[in-house]
Amino acid sequence: MDKFTTLTAVAAPLPLANVDTDKIIPARFLKTIKRSGLGVHLFDTLRFDAAGRERPEFVLNQEPYRKAQVLIAHENFGCGSSREHAPWALLDFGIRCIIAPDFADIFYNNSFKNGILPIRLPRAVCDTLIEDAKLGGNARVTIDLERQVVVRPNGEEIHFEIDPFRKHLLLNGLDDIGQTLQHAASIDGYEAKRRAEQPWMPATTATTAASAG
Image 1 (cartoon, one colour):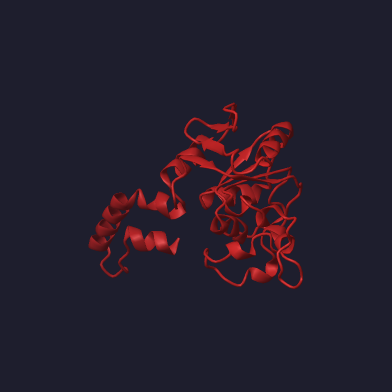
Image 2: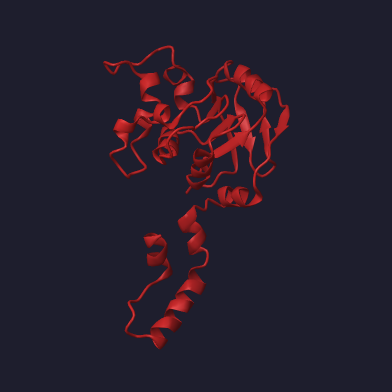
């Protein structure tokens, strides 16, 4: 998982509430367990019409938002089913941070596990950031995770809260497997001791244990 430290990028304004996971990645695209290749289907029903043509009014079909790395939305982002394909699609498109007043719990947790930073800020603040984002590519936003601030194009800093452990994981690029591999020496030591005491048991290493998890 890529580390998240400081990001300065174009932010796409998406002033919609209750954006569910089926809007983020429709169910018909959930035929793969690969994390790559899903970005082309992100917000498919909003981005494309029934014939597959781009809807020019949708923000991600407009410049400079085609390469946005930050998304700013309204309440209850990521509600609906618990599909992990939703953060996979966002990340594959290039989105590394989502700012909204609140998020559905499962989507919120899945975002951290996949290297996406979800930031909760009050609705009025989100609306201000949405107005900033509408100014386009010359109004980039900066996310400084270490300092826990969102920096507006005018230089104003907005503080956000984040769980310290989740912050540590993002700063160090650690997903669940990465966390396990931090203890590789201890795991391998335990397995070596177990093999000596119980030689009939199958051998395991930290790497295979993490992969199995």
